[in-house]
Length: 490
Ligand code: GLU
Image (tube, rainbow, N blue to C red; front, side, top):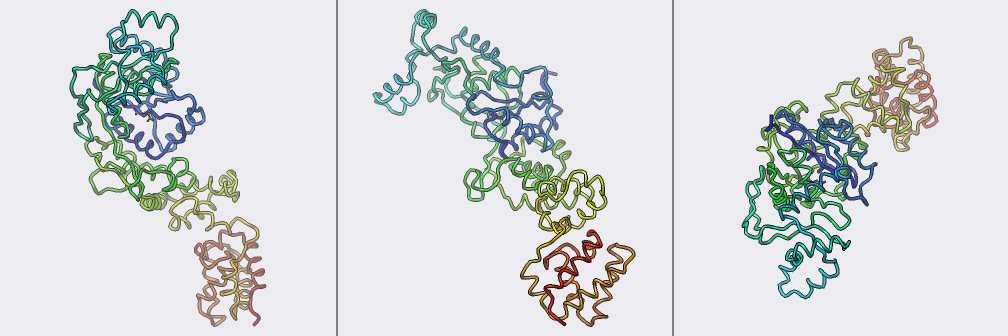
């Protein structure tokens, strides 16, 4: 089928994958999946100073973490490879030959210094911003001699002079006109033989039979330049869809100053990949204007270019956090436990094999925290007291709760009652502790707060009976004893 959709995500590996790039990847992927097309990952590593293998690896990790898969590209191969621009030199050379032969590319010998000098002398500064096309007028035979003599040169696009406007038909923004009279004979191939972005991208997109170019609208102004290369190569121009910018809440381009922006940072902060995917999918696209939670399956079966918004999207950390909390609550305790493990490991509270040794314990813990955290990393302060031998009692809680009169009797009675338990379950612990207020003639709240501060070290903690049951019985009893040091006499 010649008209089946082929789309690509083409990151430059000059840094980590950021949410803007991730959103572009998600839209391309979802569009390919919806239409039964092909999603390609291509690494635009033409900037040798800033492109690194580590960045490429990180981008791939982040894409995989988000749950994206590609049909062609690094790690999976494909019929249109290689999928790294640095390995496609032959394609750029062949394309340049085509353009040389039909006169749409010409060599330029002007040095940077010459160009600068000519610009500062020019009377019409606006026109002088671009290249003055002096080498375009060179006799081809003379130009060939200079090349043969080894003179340094770049290759420039000969912008057609009579073409009028270039019309960019954009699936998101509609029609935009760019007059060719304002266009520069820009460089296609540098003096060192490397292709520029606008040239390499078109050659690759054409050679890879890309049908739709879906990318950030910072590339809109490049599009007319790229269309001229398609035309010069006699290749079909793809459909373009330029995505609106992502802003911070202050209406400025999203950047570090607004908090985390790389996918990896969100991962480390404890966001779930499915929540981030969902959130980014809705940052500039909507299913029906209402639905906020949707599975990747829904996205893959409903994504359309028509519903991409024209206006900038505002990145709202709070909304993402809310969404993440909803996903955490829906995971189920067993799955949540598994997702929490890396965070417990990083905080040195658990080792991977702990989960295998007592999965039920970790699942019970996950059930207790599910309603209390919006990010996985928030689990640590809630559960630390369950992992450490010793706890630090919050001084304020020690004073305001343990320092009250009657505490000593409460701690001693609780110790005695719990010690006699044969079964260390939340139910048995609850039945026992609920009897104490009457025995001691104090308010239930006083008993529970005292025990809570003694075992968890704080007045705010996970549900009391369940957390006691998660603690080793002797550890729990030991904490009740050791809290006596704060207790008022009598
Ligand atoms: N490598 C380019 C970028 O990361 C790709 C732009 C495009 O999609 O054409 O901005």
